[in-house]
Structures are given as structure tokens and as C-alpha cells.
Image 1 (tube, rainbow, N blue to C red):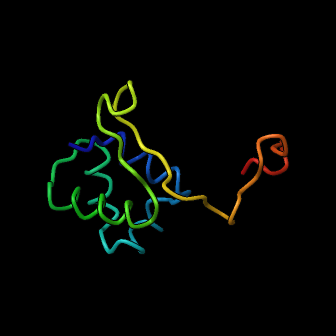
Image 2 (tube, rainbow, N blue to C red):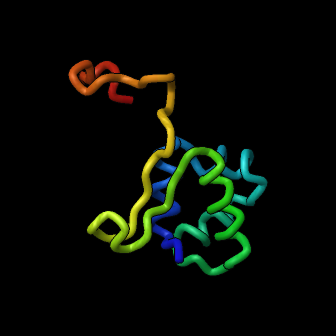
Length: 94
């Protein structure tokens, strides 16, 4: 089962605000709020999960990587190779 924290983390990894996620996914901001708070509506959670997966988010189940549940990117964001770790600095961390 996907947790509200995983949904919030997936949105954050993609750099999407709730309004932009609402526009792109077709869900209302209120539905996103509910899914990220307590996961009240299973249909909205499922729809949000499918959207995030299509946008490049992988949901990691509890214990899959030796730790708890989480999320990760399935492909680089913002360019083919992204920024190499040695090139990260305060001007390009956003």
C-alpha cells in the first residue's frame, strides 16, 4: 500500500506543486490534499499513483531495499545525464 508520505515525496521529486499536479493529473487540489494527508479516497490514491509512476516515480515497498518504504526516480530528470555530483553547487541545486 502506498503511504501519504510516499505520495508527497514523489510529488517533491518531480518538483510539482499541488496546483501543477492537479492540472496535470486531473485531480482536484482537495483530492491531492486528502491523499497526501491520510489517503482517504482509494480511487484518488490509485489515480495519483498511476500518474506519478507515468511521470517517472517508482514506489518502493517496505523492505525492498533493506529499509522502509520510499520512492525514487526511474529516469533522470532535467536532462539526459543530469548534473554530476562533483559539479553540484549552490547555484545549480534548485
